[in-house]
Image 1 (spheres, one colour):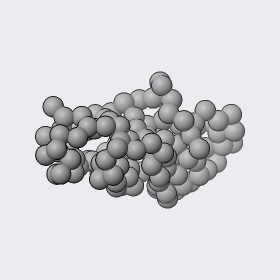
Image 2: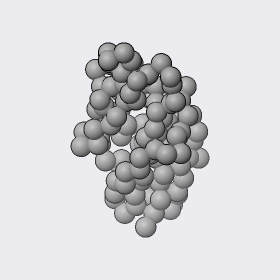
Image 3: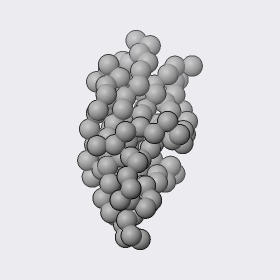
Image 4: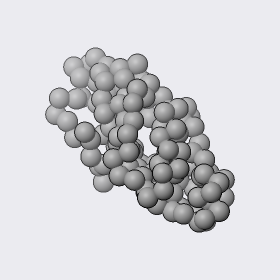
Length: 123
């Protein structure tokens, strides 16, 4: 299980009338030479669920996800909910579309769990 690194890189993606900020980080792991790195051009733009947008819901969802050695997301789970299941699922759907340069150990690509926080805010 990974933890969210406070020095993670933040990327802002607009979603309908609001925006989300995914913060992707890798677990500090002495056994891994390089963490998985997202190719943000491949990532789906997270869509603010219409009902949450209308209700003006905001929140942060923390996901854990497994990046396979081929750079694809194999699995994901909500480790901390935003409080709004539809926003949590929208974040899971978005991260599933991303492709990554996989983590490596000893110069070889390896499967690695990492984390992301989607911060759902309205303008």
